[in-house]
Length: 533
Image (cartoon, rainbow, N blue to C red; front, side):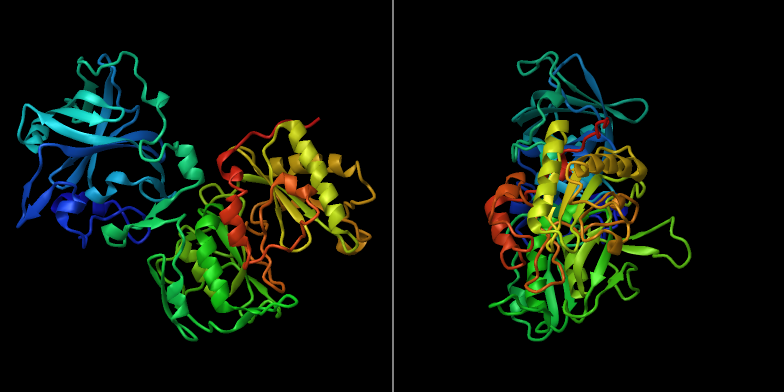
């Protein structure tokens, strides 16, 4: 519809996951929630819907939206609506949004228009007061509305100022509340969650290049991979709204563990699609280094960083402005689940994302402790080192989360708030690990060269550097049985059943279903690293 032209112009619908307002196959009366169209004429019921979405993009604001004539007429309200009749809120008219956006709660990729996290802060119905033509009232510069929401109730007024901006205020009526602050009511009326909780564990992502009725891509529900099973050796697989050309589906990519069948490319791609929504938050907005084994894990692999010229145009990517000639210029960025499936089909058996985001590549979001066993280090000794670090983090009051590497080691990720550079995080981890290592000098070597360590473990703080990566959570490793780098609870360090490579692409999904994602704290608990004495 013409009223959405400005909305569409502001968005690259190949990259920005918001609905474009494309025609839905649903009945219009259902899709529009009471606004029906016939030959261009629009009729509305007496009570239309409204929504207020708390939206953290470049800045926190509240999106105040009224359903009028089949679209969402919208304002950005930086400080949010209030029931306090003494307060006038600045409101900035923004482009009309498609009606399908009315119950969106989830994430919009960073770096795109409106990128951030969104919750449905309030919702309900509204009625115009003293007018039968709210569009005409808006054109005249003043609209009075009665809201019937869960938080916002009573009469509100939108009035245009001389500067062509708007004010939003509440009349003094029976619903008015002096001193009412929207920030004291932070939870979604749809899910009961806060923005932080939605950001850490999103359920939906928008894909505006799809029809509006399909624009919400689920990130938590069970992924339907049945389309892969009907293909023979290859073909086109429709997954996460993308068409992927997959090949050599019956090729063995991972040799078997004892007593098991080998793992084919078909099984590997199925696992990648199933784990992608869970792994996505650890990969999004980060350059990806791909460890490729196109002929299988039993052959020699190689690192592949540059996104090839033949890659589909829809793949998210990042051009590194600091790359010197001969260095990688363009990286794959896994901002949507289908991008990870593409990488897997490209032969990337391991996924290594940068520990900084592409908008600030010199600022890490994690500090990393890598417990790298030596040739004679037993797994029990690795567990000893991990327990000592656990005690240190407990003593410091620092949030840190361990995961198995899928081989013989353990890695510990420490979420950090924006600020320190890699030099600062490297120095902090080195000081911490040297303190821990001093307790068990018989287990640890600080020598750089492997052949100089006498078979001892290394507490590798040097991974805290730009473009240094550790294997991502849930990434497979190129070994028999396709073990994965599985997050674990700290308490599992004391479980005699724990093995370094016991979780594979064949059993880790069941574990996630039972225990949830044990690594989520590294996404939702950024912290300042305390000084070490």
